[in-house]
Picture 1 (cartoon, rainbow, N blue to C red):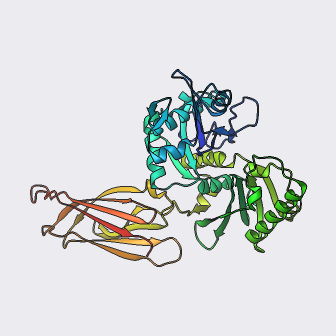
Picture 2 (picture 1 turned 120 degrees about the vertical axis):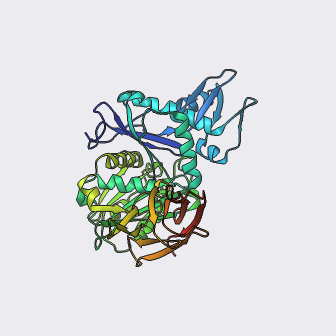
Picture 3 (picture 1 turned 90 degrees about the vertical axis):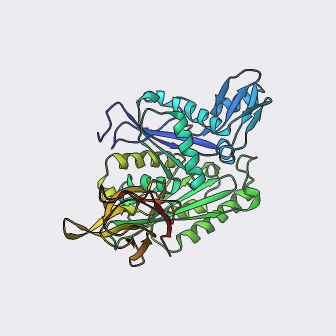
Length: 428
């Protein structure tokens, strides 16, 4: 199916600071399955942790790491993502370790779980998803991927928000004919994702609004002692009030409840409210499955993928190009297309400037505003026809970098070697 051989696995990896998950499919349109660190069980959470056995260079990962640390057999290292982002060396038994190397080791060991479905050597394509993808996280993921030296070049990143979108895209359409809401309840907060559409555009633009809420202080420690009946009632009422605020008399087709916070038997009135005219689902492997579906869409675009486009915080929200003459005819050159991830937006093109020293870029937001023209002036560019190489890429979600190099014009005019750089704010 698609561009992969039948024995290649499509993998979605949800990388979290506290725990991670791995889902896979065996074809570009196959069902996504989630791996368990305990074979045969539906225990999908892999603690993002390592444990170094005392006195020897032996490392355990995930649940084995927690077990060995609990039995005082070694030194536990948790919060691997946070430590790698911080970059400070980790001291374990008086030895210093690079935190990025430790995260890479965890990633490599956990990918060994693919032996349940095949082997890690049969990895065909990989999508890594995490809660948020800022510049620091993208750089970290790129470094980890480089160190892993996986036998595939099809490696991508996306946020939890985008994984929710791709998960829904692969669900029956009646579940997302109106707004879909995801509640992610773990540790000290509930994160809310609400997916809506602008059906007046072609393709249909999909937005996901993100918010966070805290429940009363006493109910944050979901791993602590059991709640009393009174505390369960109060938590139930607090969540009902939150859900009512999120829905706000809007039509909602489906509700998804993920995270260990929903595992307690405290939902009564709130669950009745959620189920009133809506489909409600509970689980905890949505993001890894959404990452797997995200890879599938990269390989073979589904019909729904052709009809809808997602515009999240990580996406370029404007088409960028320029008006040119091609073989004497006026035409438009598309350079960067709206809907791609900002950290993947990078394009090089060559062009001829017949006269003057200015290049005009057209910036056309997908929704909201009319297009505008950004002028780039090439100071001290020699007169006459010039051959130029132009690179466009995004430094951040909203900042476009433009680099133009003078290539000269053959024997008529040698290159000056000059490079012009300019930054453009896309969404003024």
